[in-house]
Length: 236
Picture 1 (cartoon, rainbow, N blue to C red):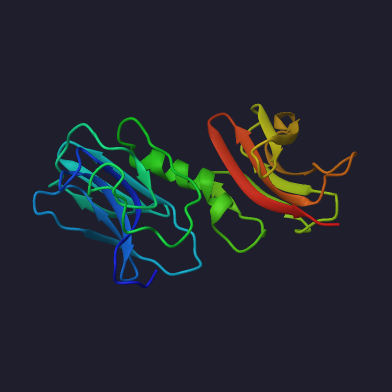
Picture 2: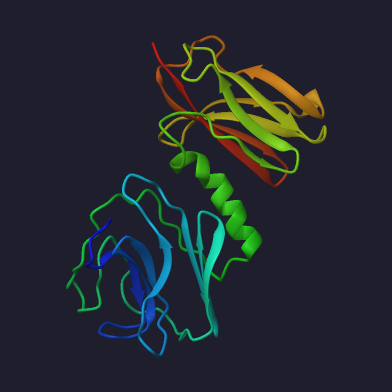
């Protein structure tokens, strides 16, 4: 990620050539975004280092564009041009040369790409980052503690675990809530309704018979529109 050449993560243009659109790249140790400004310049969004995951959101609407990195607002531009995107969506390379003329490939890993219809509000960006953070941030399979208000998913103890997944979490109310165990393919392996436990801190074993197979998992706690996640692993 320290290369001085542009390595494109994403590009979607209004047309091929030098037309405006949205381009996201890494160069000189920085995340850079091309808003399609009339000045045709790149904007430095945030420093980046090799070996780390980053959650990036770019929103664009007439007269405004914003960049968020790991849930934090980093840039705003009033100079963006706006129009219907006409090129193909390219992930991990540029396409400004024309159809099939890919270049500037990205030398890292891209875990997930979402395209939204309409620009997200700042609160929606925060919610998106918090719901995804446990998948990509942190070290190895250590639990991630995400908390907004009183709804909290603290993960499992011990972690990694041998078959038993003793999940600790907190609920702000006795409203319906669900605790789920998700495998790496996105399949729900276990689920348990926990709202009846009431407000406060609780402990639930999601690794009951039959024992969970050794693997990495995502623990997901949902209450109403609030979702919190944490990572866990089961070893032999």
